[in-house]
Image 1: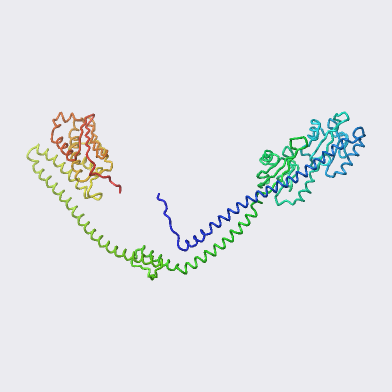
Image 2: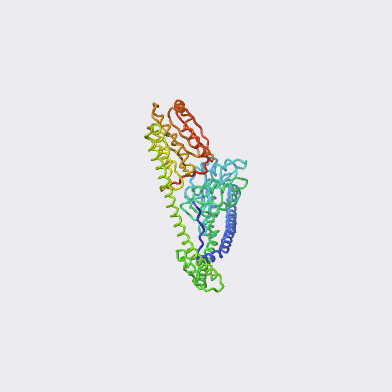
Length: 579
């Protein structure tokens, strides 16, 4: 399949295209600057998110230190060394009044059962709480995981601190639950942009706090897996860009918080800024600029087309119309554009000169075609007349030979052979002036006719012809036709003494610049000729002479039949082109 050629645009389209191409560098620079600004804005937003995370972490760290200090102080009060549960509960209730962000505080024994608490009944089992277990096991302050405070059901983060006797033995454990709703005030005070989230996550990835509240991000459930993996693997603090559970891509800035004397985190502070904030302002600015460029392009294209049509549009239209008329066959068409030394006038003059020259050439060509046709007709009539005369002459010779057939039997036998030879030559000439060619003989058509004409010498049960679409000129066709005629006649003649049905095969093909002719039958082979003394007879001598006339070589083989191979130069052969 040929590639499509380039089609040049019209002048109007070319003007518009030129205007469009002229602003491509500006558009490219605008887009490049926008991308660069977006990357810069992205870095600013990530830095702002980290700054806010650090500020919130500082507040949370201060709150945690206050809680730990409170637990340390309360464990030193004398009432808990030997006071009554009522006195202990009264002290804890006073602490709650001074710390409204604490939901509840309790003192439990070493088995986790509540001994004193303003909000829990004595004997309440807290042994299943992680912070209680950790404080008793480590002997130091610990933080737990997300819980719903018992009694109130408020989402909270628990802390615990062991209480010691004077002898340094653990006498029990103080625990309190911190209201996570206190971060609501912080979230409202910061005034985050839309779709920006503030989250607190415990050490297991469970949301302690999440604002703004969303059904896709419920408190008390784990955060999205890939987001959590990015946070956990990010070190003490950093940023990770992921798609949240609500389907929004965000820059998640995070900070890991640990308790004093501990390396394991008890909480992560997370602030997530929508990623599109980095591109929104730039996108809006780019959109405005592109709209302005589009309007300017439209105005510029309109001006270019209007002025172009006024200055040279009509002239170009005249050129195009004249060219179309010339292409349609009207060689008398002219542009009639005056010569004012402009480029368009020069093109018009060249087009007019070309049309004038084409008109002259056309007249000359028509005269030459007329003369050529007349000459061709004359030669065609002459060629057919020559072929007809040759055929008539051969038929005359055939008639003369038949006049002598009555004299003796040997003469009749000779006459029949001569008649077949003459018919073979006549058939060559007959094919010459048929529709399929006037100078070459198609062997695929000739050989079947030859076998059919030889039927008077004997019967043939079948034959196959494979000439490979090869045709020969008259000089080579007649010798090969006579060779084939002699071989066919010889096979039919001796087929009577053969017990099997006679089959004849003729194959013609090309072989390294030569024509290879192979004749084969399934008759008695060369032995039949030896028996009859025909090996050196007239037929054999004729075949040898005709082979020399073709400048070829011949081989005879006898193996379950006769096989004759003749190879001669290809210089007078051609392939038949299917019609």
